[in-house]
Image (cartoon, rainbow, N blue to C red; front, side, top):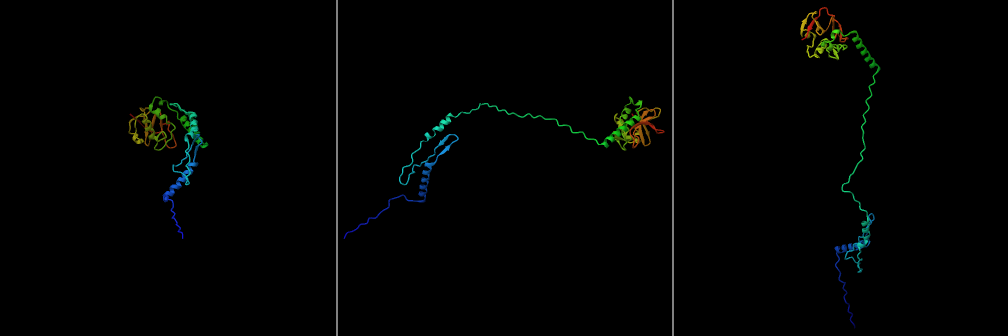
Amino acid sequence: MSESINRARHRAARRPSTPLTEFANAASEQMGTVGRRTAVVAASSGLMVSMIAVPSHAADRDGAPALAAVDTAALTASARAVLNTSPVVASPAEAVFTVDAPVITAEKPAPPPEPVRTRAASRTAERASTTASTQVASNPVPQSVAGNAVLEIAARYVGVPYVSGGSTPDGFDCSGFTSYVYAQLGISLPRTSSAQRNAGTVVSRADAQPGDLVWSPGHIGIYAGGNQMIDSPRPGKTVQFRSIWQSSPTFIRIG
């Protein structure tokens, strides 16, 4: 009876497999594929850079040899030739830049249009002018005014209307008129007619001179010589030369 001998079979020794080794093998396969297919071409500058990466341990599981190395110097020779023949752009060390600025001229604005005067306003102005002219014509300046400082100033305001309490060329009452005229000569008079009565020296009518004050109760004016005076009479009237109407006025010399 023969004996059969069965020999035990043993597996070939192999590297133990762990998750880390499996991940490394997969990465190697991907790098091999990328190394065989990847190339970046820079068309705008004429450069082509070959990026072929072949890891030293990249090999097929069947023992196939790795891909041969690529000569990158030969691939970039044409690109270098293009760079060497390209024109060189240079600028001077002291470059001057100019800017053409537009010329701006300012034009003088047109004057505003004159206000249009209405017919009513025109008539009012015409009437006022006519009234003043009539009053001056009907109240001629006496000869005594010439050379008399008080009367020359007073004559400037012929035609100014009477205004109760007025003491400016916009309107005068009697004492406001006399105080304003004397103030132009640097002489200060009291504001009321009763106070002006005692502001100077009383003189007789025979001795009165042009420029003296002519006073009567409640009213005062300036003596213009002869039988005339200039004053601001009453509401509705204007400054004017006229005859002395008081029966017994008082003449007062100032200064």
